[in-house]
Image (tube, rainbow, N blue to C red; front, side):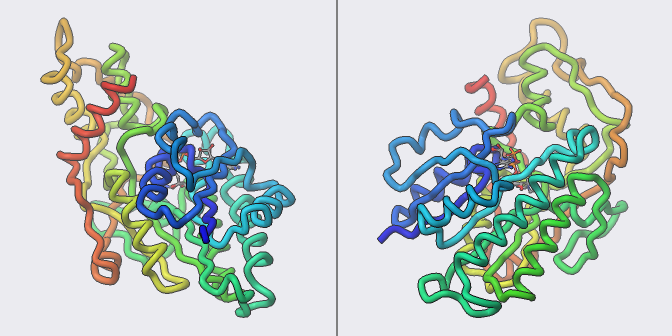
Length: 336
Ligand code: NAD
């Protein structure tokens, strides 16, 4: 019999890389992809799933309690992999309300429905749901910012600085509470910045590529010296798969590939690859770089210490930034 797994936010960037990978790898699972299809969700990223017999798409909002209850009952949902979120820091500065609504209340709603559907009472699962698991996808941004040295570990205190990271930190704490109070089988992963195919062009890497290909200014916040630790999206999917199947209940894992780059380095890397691949008629792509006023509360540096997932689950990324960025740029050239 199929086990039905609810994947939320599967039409977004990471979800739409994860869903086809998971459907293909686990034909014994029925993947129910629930997505509200906000501006960030795009079903055209999932055309490859249309012929999968073990895939169903459901449009809806994770904040709608009755609807989520109905989805659990209709598909007999036995596990959840929760990606759905408002995810763009700039939008969270302009309009924090949606972030609290979806990231905090939506996550709470899913936890509450899952708990009542899977368990009779705290620490007492129903017979058919003994192995039911709730995996929550989160971000390294919950830890705040680093100086020049050091890394985020699972034990680093939470210190979120933007409405986005504060809303994700809140959702992580709710997940934690459902483990400690109710004994729900939860796991959480906090990942560094992802890049790869299918990302919305509001985000740094697709935006740089898109602007290059359309001869538009490449805007870089402040001095461009902010550092992010980049991970190719398929390596993130692989880590989620491992945690979902192998981690102990209640565990959290940091995921990152030791690929620290300043925003300016990222821009120059993309420009110099495009200079070779699709040269401009006049000048170089880097001529398009323009510095703009810094983002409010812009964190200086994120960097992950992934030694726990490496040690416990034997995870390591397949791509370095040098190999992953080429695959990514080639994908956007073909798909824009
Ligand atoms: P995304 O913005 O590309 O996709 C989010 C998806 O969630 C969209 O398809 C959207 O339609 C859906 N959604 C939003 N609100 C919803 C709601 N109320 N109900 C149902 N669906 C809703 O985001 P992403 O970059 O794919 O990120 C996925 C998850 O991974 C998020 O939880 C994010 O915090 C986390 N994360 C992202 C990164 C990154 O670099 N992109 C890094 C670490 C963690």
